Image: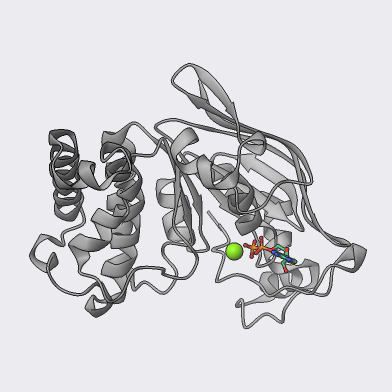
Length: 298
Ligand SMILES: Nc1ncnc2c1ncn2[C@@H]1O[C@H](COP(=O)(O)OP(=O)(O)O)[C@@H](O)[C@H]1O
Ligand SMILES: [Mg+2]
């Protein structure tokens, strides 16, 4: 049973085709990774799925409790609630001046406001609001425990170490109760220990929450370690869609990351610093290679 189906998605910015006729399916209880060199169109896919951009063409269908919600047909700001999609961003966007707990409560603003019936009377007295508020705090506490930040609940989010801020962002997205969680490079800047903690957190979410995860990531230890399937983009096109082991050995994938000449060089000896790939066809801008892609030599 698919959770989200992307069919023939194309996103143009003027003459630039950032996403080119992309189709893929992601499932509940699975981690689907989207990888590819910088500029390949990964974040643009998220921006289409979450309503930041309206696709130039194509269909985005989300399965919500037996019903199919067509994302391209609903207003962007309604998507999170209507279709149950939450995301994190490539750059951390926490409320640094709020406490850790407050960050998790404001994420639930939508359901709290609905419980207040959008009136001051609702806020001041209704039992419905109070129980919604208690539920919001309970959900926040649950996730604080899961990300190991219960003892930092009343400290400022901005004072947390970087890896903890990344986990807090994920918890904040989860507090909205999504069916699909979209994570944009959550391991960027993490040290190996933090990156391993992130792996464990994502595996726990997959195991216990019954949701699907779409994961954009450059860290191949994360991607290869926890993904159920991997989609590879290059210049907006899908060049591979398979299980991690197959992706690792796919010559097209290796070429997209390294370029032909660099593969020859890599075969001769060590993989040294690789110059950014040449500008692609169709006047696409030159891109830089992502962090090291571990070539399998097994
Ligand atoms: N709002 C925008 N306007 C114009 N070009 C954009 C916009 N957003 C993304 N792009 C371009 O689309 C391409 C894909 O970008 P992006 O999706 O951010 O790549 P990735 O996340 O894979 O690094 C890039 O060439 C980028 O410059
Ligand atoms: Mg990106």
